[in-house]
Image 1: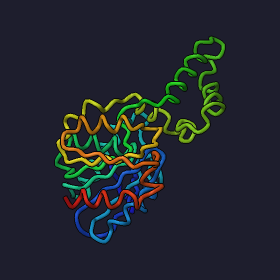
Image 2 (image 1 turned 30 degrees about the vertical axis):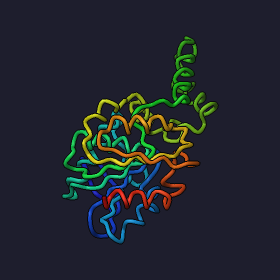
Image 3 (image 1 turned 135 degrees about the vertical axis):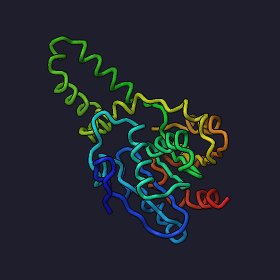
Length: 248
């Protein structure tokens, strides 16, 4: 299904009946990323998924968009559907948006589930990429060819980075990488479940413990031998924990 929100075409799906549960994918994902884990809830819930702008079948965001702009779109999406008091599941970047919405629009979310969720950046690869960029820009003759040199450099040394995978979202990604949502955590009063893969290298486990410490009404469940893509690689593993949390 398609919906226009703020003039942008947004692709979403909605199945089942009952209490609404919104599943929001991570950076680089689509609504299909969370279809398997969300399917377990369709028999008893109103299951909603969407493609965030720039991914799947949704239109690109504006170049200046950061996390707060993405979160605002999700808020408008829920208002346009006419629903609130939802259960919110956010994976990685989707969790960032859940943090913002829970802190600034608490009436929209009754229960929050954060899965390997990014809220501040500690990625060494990103820091290395920034150092690489500063090095090239410090050389006058190369500085005049900045965008061209940068593109070559990223593809040579950071082939798997999000900057290479999603070049049309480069300005958005760069803005998001500078955002620290930590100050919002103390504002969250929503009952929160934190799910984490013990072997996550993109959002390491210490971040999960910080979430647990700073979100007052929260509980943490760490899954051994699991990585960042926990809800994609092993959706059944987290399903019973989510169901227990929703029903509590």
